[in-house]
Length: 527
Image (tube, rainbow, N blue to C red; front, top):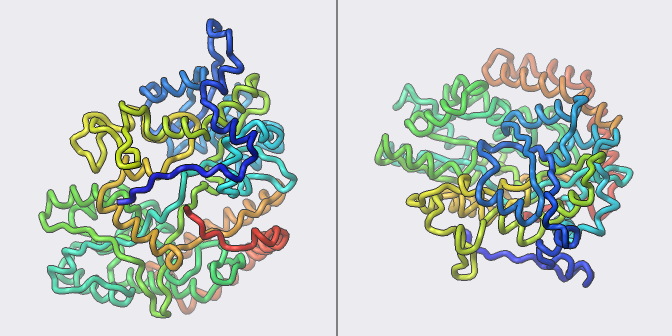
C-alpha cells in the first residue's frame, strides 16, 4: 500500500502570491461579503456529471458554506454527459454559469465568445498558479495558439499506471503451468486451457473492440491512430507501420485459436464481469487494478481457489515488452472547467475556481472534515471507521453518501492518496504500485500538447472521424478472418492513404516543430 503524505511546495512563487495562497477560504470570500451576511447568497448554475448521486451530502453543504454561494446543479449521467452539455450549450436557452466540457468544446465555443478567457484573471488566482507551476500541462493542454485560456484542465494530485494485465493464477497453477512472461507462452498456455475448459473465453474484454486491440498495438509499441512515438520523439500514424500489422496478426492468431471471446466487439460490461468471476476468463488485458479486489471477492464465492494476480506486460516475438498508457496528473483536455463569459457573477466564479485549488478545499472534497470523516495518523490522513471502503468493509456509510468521493464542487482536484484509501483494495494497490515502479520501461507516455486553431481542428475532425470508423470496421474483419492478412492488407493501406491521414499527421508534426525546445521532450513525470 502506498503511504505518502504529500504537501504542496510553494517556494517558487512570489511572496505576495504565497500569502494569498495560504489565506483561509473564509477570508477569500469574506472580503466580498463582509457586513452583508444578511443578504441571500449568490446562486450559481453549475453543470456537472451526476456520478449517480445527489448534491446534498454533508460535504456538499459544507462546500456551499465555505464558498458562501448557493448552487443550482444541472446534472447529466456520466456516460451521456458530454453529449448533453454540448446540446445545452448549443441551444438558445439559458446557459450555466460554470460547467464541465471537453477540449473539443473549448475549441468550438471559446472563439464564439461563449467561454471566459481566464488569462487576464490569473493574477487573481494564486492557488491555481501554484498548480500550474507544478504541472504546466494543466495550462499548455488548453491554451490556444493565440494565448487564450478558455478553461482549466482537470487533474489529480499525481499520476499513475492504473491498468495492466491480470491472470487467473490458480487456473494456471492447478493445471501444472507457470505464469507466462511472453505472448508465445501465453498463447500456448491458453490453448491448453481452452482444451481443458472448452466452454471458456480465455480472453474477454469490455468497452468495444479498440480497448482489446490497443493492448496488441501497445505490445509492438505502436498505436491505433496518430500518436507520439516514445523512442523517436516524433508523431506517427500507427496503422501504416509494420509493427501495427504484426499486432493485428497476433490478435488474429489468438482469435483463430478461439482464445478471444467471439463477441469481443460487443461484449456488455455485465457479461464481461460474469466471464471473469465465474471462471470463464483466464487473462485480462488493459483493465483497471481497482477492480481486482471486487472480482477476487466475487470469484472466491464461486471457487474458493480463485486467485487473480497482476503480472507485468508480456514480451513479443520481437523482444519488445508491451507498454501500458500512463495516466498523467492532468486529464489532457478530457475534462475542462469553463466559465460562461456572459455570466453575471464573474468575480464570484473566479474566486470560486481559485478556491477549489486551495489545500482547504481539496481536503474537504476528497477527505471531508477532520475528526468526522478523517483523522491524521502516523503523518497521513485516513478515513474514520464509519467510512465504508474496500480496506474497511465494516464501515456504515459510503464515501458517496458522505460526499468524500472527490466529486463535490466543480471537478475539484482529485487527491490520488484519497482515491487509494477510498476505492482500492490490497490486491489492486500492490499491482498498481508494481506498475508505477516500472513506469520508465513499460509506460506509454503521451506527446507534448500541440495547439490547433479552430479551422485546423475542423479539418482534423473531418478527416479522422470517418477514418477512425473505417479502421475499426476493417480491424474487426482482419481479426475474425473475414479479411485476409495477406491479400487484403495492401488495399487497406491504400485506402488509408486516400482518406487523408498524411495531411493530419503533417499538421501534428508542423505544430510540434514550432514548440519551444524545452517542450519537445517526453514528459515522464507522473509525480
